[in-house]
Image 1: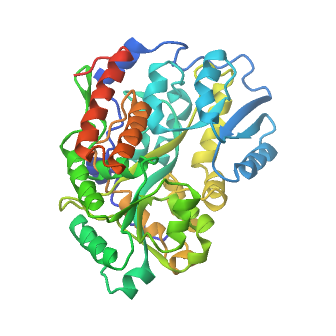
Image 2: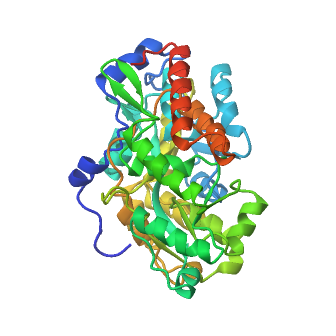
Length: 442
């Protein structure tokens, strides 16, 4: 990293980027009232504390095997067995926790934490990790904090940015857009050249979520002792109007994300921009390597005149409530996510954008990238990481709502619904899902 940290102070970041993820006292009451299954309180140290133990770790970051090997070589008393998460492995963990067969540490997106805390599946690890709280800024720490309890250690962050084809914009004399108004105008100019501004992928909700966050919205909220449904609130409808314009005017190519058809469209220059998260450049390199040198990164187009950015939240390492080795599991998680050695593995070999402050000082994070024409792209993502509004709350049925959005947007793409109509339908389903979960909703 550069000698001087370009980000503002922690205090100023917290004011505008608090992420809305620290639960209020009312939410804690809701969690306590509704939690089932095992206890989420920190247990006393197990009888074998201090004796050699083996713990199991499940994760999906590339090359984690190397980090585990390094840990095992240096820590004979706490050996780690690693399992790479693929396919539906993440879906298996809740039932494994219930059955007492879950790994001692596993990766989980912060979007899924509320649901698992309500179910009593995650351990309050405050007693084990409070000593590394200063390794994170307030936003990252907030992502795993509920009331006064800590339920995980943030691993990676997902600030957004706009990846764009420099050759396409230069060839056609189109200015790189900085606002949504300019973005739509650029799309209209590109359409005349037979090129799409971006894509609409109903099977990938991340694009929608980050832009609603950027607009100051959320999918859920908290009002006293009740959840609120925000899926069709004012901010979401603002984004809906922008997307509807782009779709109606034929500026978006409708194509399913992650498919060969999608990557072919990107590789062939049919799609000029991709507004997505800091981990996506690695996938561009992997899937459209023929376009190396033709890309650059800038901030996502600003919405409503506000200099805000979107976010994909955080990934975290969490510990199940019924693990037999909580202290050892937490010790390994702290090393992996906050130590210089662990962070070097995550950044240099795993390719992640780190959540911990020491990781942001790792020189490997700020290097010139040939794929992006020699640009130091993480300078953009570092700047954008400070600009997400403090409005976002992950609700208790977030995953269900996200799936409902995908289904509804597929109907939008087919012309059956408008985005506004889709949001109203999803909001109604979300309200019923919260009620079905036995929770109070306003």
